[in-house]
Image: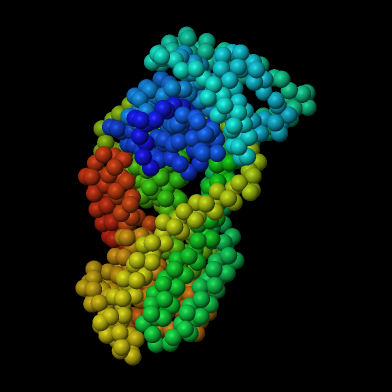
Length: 640
């Protein structure tokens, strides 16, 4: 997509608003899919730039570029995100100075967000106020007095519905009618007295705007506020709040295993049946063998765990949509401060349980460079969704035939253990970093909301499909490589075990065996560990090939793989998968940094290849050493 406005008459508008105000939702409605995300020159912070969607344009209209700036609470910058917002308004490398501004105001947080609108007004930018979350206000019987806001700010105020797009065309028309200003002023920071006065003015204005409602609506709002205050007495309690936090996160992580079990069985049976169908096409054919035991088994071994990833994303979505996520960040601020971080680090750390790449990008809103350094360093230790297939397979092996809640609790323990290891790493790093300025943490606490199931399911499905699309290509590529390596050069050999031993994979594996043998495993698992550096999920598909070469009558890919693992022995006749070796593998995957995308993003975000290489070397050495120590300890104690 090319942004060249040199020969065409253009206009531009910037969306400015606080984080989670609905700004990016509005941006997506305005631009559709016709946008790109770019880094601001000299900074790692991104902003998005797109052209107004075609269905919102008129035939003879000039091009309107829309810019989604990083979320900010103020035009008086205190973090890298806020500095880029200011620069993007006045010195955008693509657009120059933007022509107008849309200030996105969350109707449920009006008082705080009107302060940002006041600051934009003082600059002289032609502006429109887009009032979001108005559907939540209407549910409480609240009908904001938009004319009062228009009179106060001398600009159009449009109510926007982020779910259905209501008010979108009215907003675009209001932007068209704004008159350009030849000059605008840079924002001037408020003094303490001016700031107190502005805060009071915005509080009073918000009360007046929201006071135009029925007595019934007023009563409903008071009930919601009282309910929020009552719940916060428990959720934000210094002791009970932490206990509830642990219980909530335990419920989330445990549910990943047992709640997804029915869907996993369906997916597993589908790929088992598909394997049987493909195998029957042309028995003995190389292409059939490749499709059945290379592609279908590899994808089935990984995709069987997709329902668990869906449950994880759904759970995080519920925490965010109900308003609890902001409380958890506030609650965790004090424990985080003990290891050199603040509550601002909570959301990036929690995001790390989905994927480390966006989690590292999310650290940009941390104003303290020291806090950001520590947070970025420990994020790869969080249990990302790519680790979930590995954990689920190994736990299914350990708890085979036992109630699902046992594996679920163990999985929850692994998640908490990752957080504990991250805290230890943060504490160690904190001692070696030079002392910096204390980070000040402040977060708005929204009213508790009832989540919309349809929206949550759609969001979770979108994120899950994004994971599948991201994981699919490396799984397919390495499935092909692993199948070829495990099949050739003696592909006509009838003895499948000898064929595997003499294959290219077998030859490479035997070179690796002295390295992985102290971990209690053999060369076949070693190949999987190496292949996992491309993508952790590939470890499971690699095992599906190296341990599932012989065709089986089993109608389940996972059950077939578990049976092969249960009987697998090394060259000494000892079982490979024992309690000790499985625990060692779990610990290895919990700590090891195998995702090269994470390494690349860490280098980009911190502006240092050295930082990323330190993470890569330290985490993998510690993971290997601990895995070996655990396996050898189990052997010494005679635990099998």
